[in-house]
Image (cartoon, rainbow over all chains, first blue to last red; front, side, top):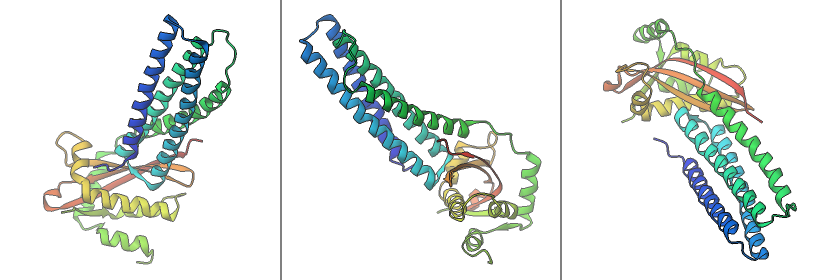
Length: 180
Length: 100
C-alpha cells in the first residue's frame, strides 16, 4: 500500500551506519592488540570522524524529509513506519559515534582532545534533539485512545441507512465551494 | 474498482468545524480519507478491524499543519464492501504541537 521511498532510504542508511560502526570497532580492536604507527592510527580515526560527521548530515536530512512527509499527510501505518525508520538512523548513528570515539581513545592514549571531536559533540547534541522529537511523535501516535462507544457507532449506522450521508462528490463539492 | 466512500453527515460537519486547522489542511484530510478508503479499504479492514471478523474498521491519518500535529481516527463500516460501498460513520482527532 505504501509507496514511500524515505523509509527504505532510512533503513539503508541505518544498515550502512551499523556496518561502518562494526568496521571501526574491528579496527580499534586490532589497534589494541597490535598498534600501528601513531600516524596511521590517528589517520584512520580522523577518517572515521569525518565520515561520522558526514553521516550526521544525512540523518538530519532524513528527518527533514520525514517532517515534509507529515506536512503532506500520511496514513497512520505509514507515519509509524517512517518514524521507526528514522529512529533507526539516529540510533545507528549514535552507535557509529561510540565506535569513532573509542577508536580515538585507542589510537591516542595521551588523551589529548583531537581536532574535530568538539564538532562531533555539538553535532551529537543536535541529533539528540531530533531523536527526541521523533520519539515524542511516535509516543503521540502510539498512545492508546479510549474506544468509541458502540452505541454511537450503531446510531451513526442507522442514520446512514436512513440516508443521512454525503456521497464523495457532495463532500468534495462542499469542500471546494462551502456554499454548495 | 475503487470503493464509493459515503460520509455520515455528522462526520462531514465535524470536519468542516475543526478548529485551528488551515483550509489547506482541511482539504488534505478530506481528500486523503476519501482517496485512501476508496483505494485501500480492503487493507485497512484487514489491518485494523474493531473486532474479530468485524466489518467495522479504523483508518488513521496524520498531518502536520501550522505547527500542530493532528492525528485523526476515522471509523468506517465495510458491510457494504461486497457491493462497492464504504460508509464513514465516525471521526475524532488528537492534536499536539510539533516537537521543536
